[in-house]
Image (tube, rainbow, N blue to C red):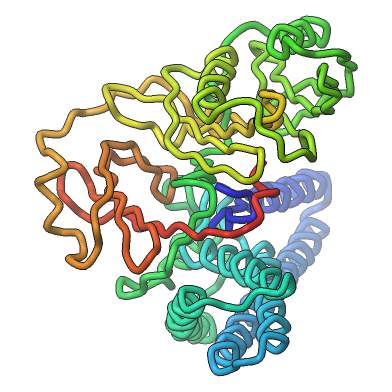
Length: 463
């Protein structure tokens, strides 16, 4: 559950406001020309139309350039991955892995300049992000004196196969653009909550493409379903009232100072907290209800452990409860040195609610919470009318790969693309030394998702 393991993590970009802005400008021009004479109006209207047409052509050209840049990045990535697989030199592998990570960043930059609906990230986009993080992790591993293992090479082989298929699908989409498809026009047409370009672009993953999804810090650790804050409860508080909430939460505080406020998805006050172990924390508290949204701190550098794993679990659960998390359960944990990382999710009717996941990091030397992220919880947590399934987990075990060893199973609410949720049976399986999670629809047995756990040596990027 390590931070740099969040390869498959994902950023949701592109705001549809750019198009609203263009419409407002157009309306302002129209109002301005109403006072002209008939001849003047006709002339102004003709100029406006020409200007609007030129703008549309220019914007379409920009979008197409970004699409072609994406194609180039994917093509380069495919070539470099094939070279890594053919090489036996650590130095060459490290250099080329870093180039793949850089190409992935360039691909992300190209995608961020395409009109993808804000709340959606297609499978192919997630895969690019994940691949960049994973290859950078392997490059760092070699730089520290290690070599690629058989498992590393097997994963790279699967990545290469997926990139080859992605290249084919994107090239097919480009041929569509070269004929009659307008990115701009399709981005202005909405299909539900998403513009048509987003929906069309997501289809480049064809039905037969299985991009490997890799998780570093637990299933669905990056599942921000919606940018709308739905889970905050309570009155509007001022900074003094929120500071008193911080004082109640951090009972071992030595000093608290107000830092400022942040008004983005959450309207929050921020504070610098120093505890009695001289650990410095940055704490973000919601103006509504005074809930702790995030905590970030490094903790001690010592490897000393003064509390047990069970103690840490209780500390994490109690901290989450005190900050408004309902019915919290630990669903994932990992330990690195004297830091333990725990993922907590609420449960309802015996169903784990993955969309409402909370992350906690605890220093086992001091027993202090030095990392906390309740962003997903306060974005997504609302009362849900969850329909109980008539099936048991045993009904669908036959759909799992025969060679995979089943280690555990439970009923969960899993996030899907396009802001959807579905109740699934989660099956934890082992295969060739790796852990996989299979998510089968609890009503139909349909395979909704497969996740693979990637183990690394660096957990510093969790929070």
